[in-house]
Image 1 (cartoon, one colour):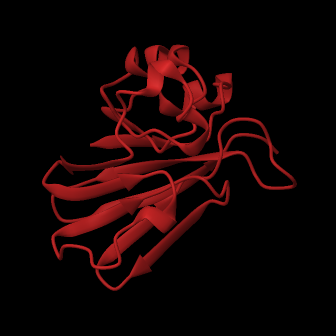
Image 2 (cartoon, helix red, strand yellow):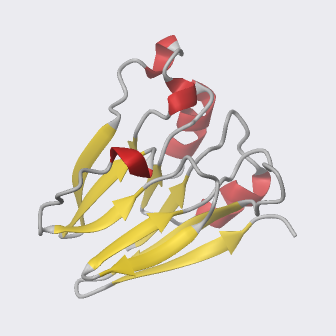
Image 3 (tube, one colour):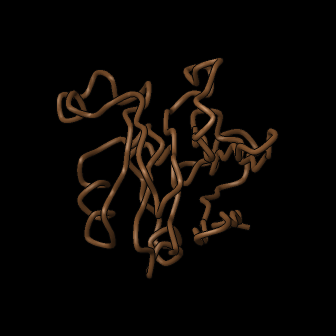
Length: 152
């Protein structure tokens, strides 16, 4: 199963991001969405899992969005939240993938048997950080992440 992971769009959904997400069976947005139109466009590609980011908190359209979401992805237990500071210190052992955004810094890191993924920011460039998203190949026996650089 091909899954797209995007974060920190801040109201900007680049054509490069849309192209990278084509063919995804599901899309995960880790917050700081920026507008409901972003969600509409992503939902036209694939079903969404998403959380509200700190910049979405004041938006009326985002009031219904959770700040922490746990869900199953092809048999794998996933924890999704915008800020890594909101990840519980003691995670259930069955959580295999933790997805966060907020920092705009892409990161793929294994911590024991758990994969921590920050897809970086796919919206406006911040400082000199790259503009990225992530793709996951979610198989029965493994999760294979890779970063996609949207701009040179």
